[in-house]
Length: 171
Image (cartoon, rainbow, N blue to C red; front, side):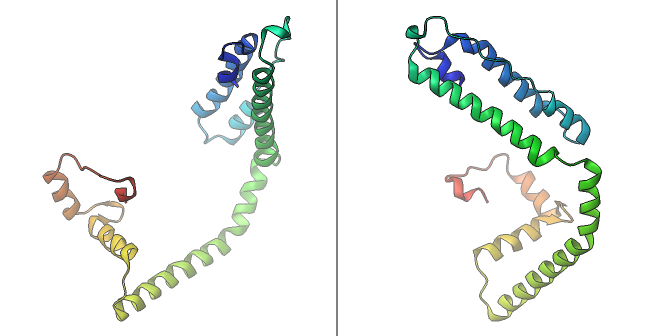
């Protein structure tokens, strides 16, 4: 919306309001998301001011005016959806639901781990490891209990930088 309002013949009088909207949204990204009530209050307190009327509408490109309004309305709608989707219930209700699901989630996690281990063992037995399996084996060599292993530390000492020639090679 700000880009459309900033264009030549764009609705420049909207800019102050749009920048205020953006500042409010940016404050959400800078708050601590560990306190449910604080986040909820911040989202609820967002105040989208009315955009000013354009005095000489013919001075502004109608398409820019409409697109600016459309993008702003879409952003406001998303904020309202967040309120409904994330904060329509109290934190204690979500926590109670999670507590109820905990045994089921633990069981499912164990099933997935057991399946993955059994599947990997069968692939090893058949000698049909794929590239992903080799990645996981390399990772096991480099990490022990989520900390760098001695092997990883020795490589860290050998290299200052690693050049990656293609994005998909980052894994």
